[in-house]
Image 1 (cartoon, rainbow, N blue to C red):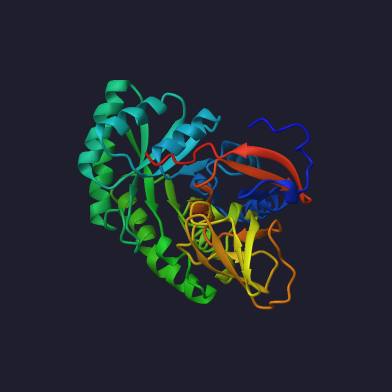
Image 2: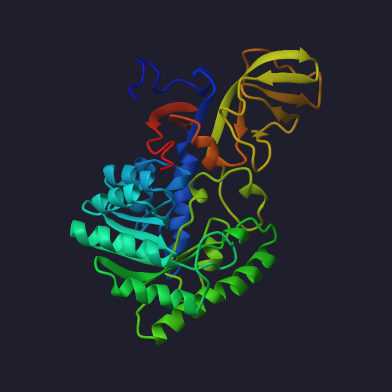
Length: 367
């Protein structure tokens, strides 16, 4: 995006709203903190780009020591590769002839990993890769308790790994198991206990497969809430944490998860219909609430009580507080991933002034 003359260096308060603000100092601090933690571990960091959808931010993570990038969707992976990212895990199943053709075409330009949990999908990937004369690295996804995708541990995982190993154009690279059902367990002690219990099935499956003669090079797992727990387990080789780069309101409630909220939504007061109520120009089309309503940054005296399509209603605990139409507030999203997908740009700020505007390049890439 080309910035209007004079906008660089402008105070945040001068920006039109709603505007998605990215505090560059806090983001860079979060990246550095997680990178430093992983320098002490045998597991490496492969951050999930679904959190930021930006090759610029992905390159910052790689520069800090990440070994590659994780994507949720093929469209995200295409954006990352076009942005110069070479090592990409698509931590989902790529199914259907059209998507598989896109996948093998992308494999000509990057080193891809893809997850599978179905023998027929393996056959389709193999046929396409062999026909295109490319090689795809494949991870068997194992259900470790989230009960979303994934084969069962043990024998089912072995059978699929052996099927991959026999398939032309494919290389069995290892296993993936996402403990997403545990990332928001509030108590650190309980989260540690449950991660150790549930991830043991994945670790045992590694040993089981290797006992049958197949080397398991990669064992990929982890989210922000479990990164420093799962990352210490034996045989786990990489962690897919993503939310740490921005953090959000939901993670602020989870014990033992460190990081500052770098993402906020700048909004304007458009009405004060009553002394104890203001209305802002941020609604469901600009900020999400599936993890709870956003909080007003730095204002314990204000409580967001509802969101409609275009508006938010805020209750003033003290009706004498001076707020009027035209004043600006910042909201902390409860869930950054889905909020940023509603916006075209990050307004990168440092020291309260605009430094840059970055496109959210993989916004809406749901295919």
